[in-house]
Image (cartoon, rainbow, N blue to C red):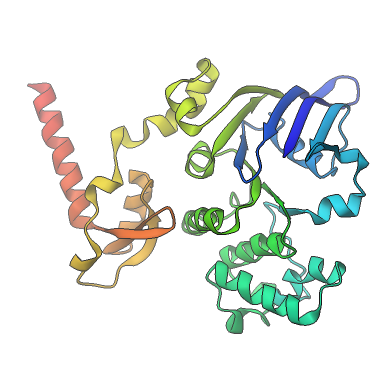
Length: 319
């Protein structure tokens, strides 16, 4: 689908941002580019839609060099979601979503139907949201609109450049769950840039870890966690691999039928202990979702049981 062959990007003679990298993103894959600041991940993403020109090597899409595409044709077939919520402030939500379909001269009825479909897809009621202005939405709601705007003209490829990193933890968690649902519904090729290894492991089918412009390891989340290529990979993924001393939220989930109060917001089954505690400080119960579906709830009593068990284990260790 997307193929990099010995791609290099230099800024001047001395600044090597990307150093002769080669990889292929498969059709329909959720492919994550990750690495520390300055690793070359965002430059790599932006070379795909020619926002940044490459210096050496070739990038092709479906076997065709990207330089042989008409620039508008290339970008119309690539949705693009930024970290900065880039909605047009003087356009309604419907007008924001409709920008590319209108440029492609879709009929008004088709555009309106598409807007309705996309807003429903991310849990925003079309009747309530289509005529609102961006400033009337929360940050998380604006970013949802940014995501569906990238899908508006039904492109084959979606590029996402740290789209959730500026959001608060609750909004970020919700949008990650939205992305898991969208992966199943839209069957698009997604290239996703992040600096957060937990986010990469949660969303990615394969992860490409970069450092100093080079690919250090490319593989599934399980491969990076369990078979790191070197100490850099081991250290980079270490926090995700040993999060909360083995805390597994799924072991403390109650069936939904046992709930006696209205649960608070949803949280992912892969959430860390820190994330669970942060939410349970405000809510008595939390719904738990996995792969976009509710699988039960967790409450304060179950987390107390976890700490009780850890305390008992610690006492045995000291004996």
